[in-house]
Length: 204
Image 1 (tube, one colour):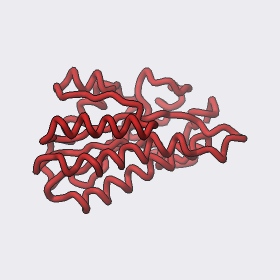
Image 2 (image 1 turned 135 degrees about the horizontal axis):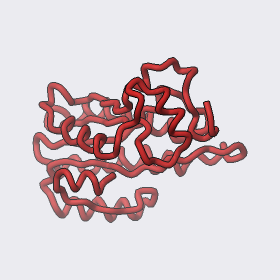
Image 3 (image 1 turned 30 degrees about the vertical axis):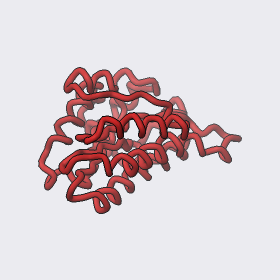
C-alpha cells in the first residue's frame, strides 16, 4: 500500500479519485506545481469482477487501471528531471487468465504494454518500469489457502515485501530496470495455467 511505501522511503503523496477526469486534472496541476519531479508511482487500482450480465460496462476498470496511469505518466513526464522514474502497476494474474476478471486483466495487460511503449518514448531521460504483484497476504480475494498451494514458495508475499521490491527495483541502474516488468508472485507463474485459482469463483 502507499502507506507502507511511505514508511520505507518518504516521498510526497497526492491522493485523488483517478476514475474522475476532473480529479486527474487537479492532481496534474498540483504535481506540476511541485516540479521538477523526481518520479511518479501510480498505485491506484480496483480489483473487481466483471459479473455475468455486466459485460457491456468495462469502462470503470479501464478508466482507473489503464487510462489514468497512462495519462498521468504522459502529462507529468515533461515536469520530470532527467533520470526520474515512472513506476506503473500491472498484475501477475495477467498470465493466469481468471475468467471472472476480464476487464481488470485487460487493463493490467495494457499497463504492461504501456510500460514498454513509454520506455521507448521517454527514455533515456526518464526510466519507466512496472511491477506486477501476485496475491498478497491479507488481501481480500479468497481462497488464500488454495493460492498458497499453487505458489512455488508455498506462501504469498507480504505487503511489506512487495513495497521493498518496488523501491529496490526502481533504484536499480536503468540498464537493469528500464522497460522491464518485475513479477512479485512467489513463483505462482511456474504452475501450469490450467491450475489457477480464480479469485471470483471460490475455488480452483
